[in-house]
Amino acid sequence: MTADRAPLRAVIADDQALVRTGFKMILAADGIEVTAEAADGAEAVAAVRRTRPDVVLMDIRMPEMDGIEATRRILADAAPDGTRVVILTTYDLDHYVYAALTAGASGFLLKDVSPEHLVSALRLVRTGDALLAPAITRRLIERFAPRTEPQTIAPHRDVSGLTPRELEVLRLLATGLSNAELASRLFLSPTTVKSHVGRILSKLDLRDRVQAVVFAYETGLIAPGQGCLDD
Image (cartoon, rainbow, N blue to C red; front, side, top):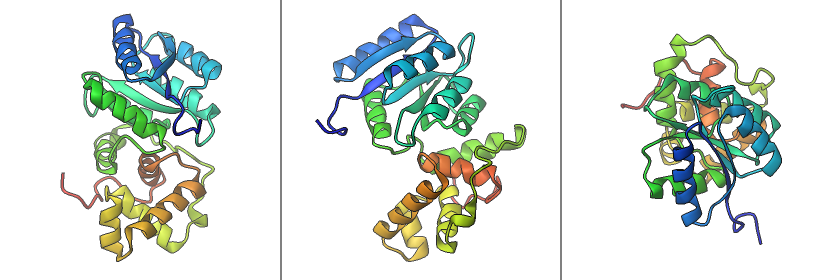
């Protein structure tokens, strides 16, 4: 069985037992294996190290260790194509979500997500795609970055390895443009744009487009307020 066809494996981390049970029932009904449950961040880190799931559904506000620190520790251990983290939050555009994205999360879901959206979101993340549209990530950054302490998500990453075209693509990607919009703006084919984005992620050791957007802001390639799309 290939990796794409293998059953998706997940860990659910939330300090409310009823929430964990509800999500587990939804995932199991769609053939997704829940390898472990965790009531706090420390348990989540241990569960991931023990079971190596494809994705973690991570609550933010938990005792002992919160979901942000747990995300940081999990992804520090993970290979680029390893475990992904999806943040569960109660409120849209929560400033904790911004912190979680800078820690390496691939996106977030509201806790009132529909069963169908939950399942499709986990399967999307498993393929290596980001759960957040870059434009949403940009709105998060523009709203919260000025209020948080300066951070560098990857001090060791150097953009000098990018070609001028790749640097241009990264800056435009960070404003929220999709591949189709990038292709139109740069007079390139969608396939060529996809190749550029793939090389950018590879060269900068980034997991997905969400992390590319965060990287561009955190390293000063683009500043909050420079987005080119209307919200």
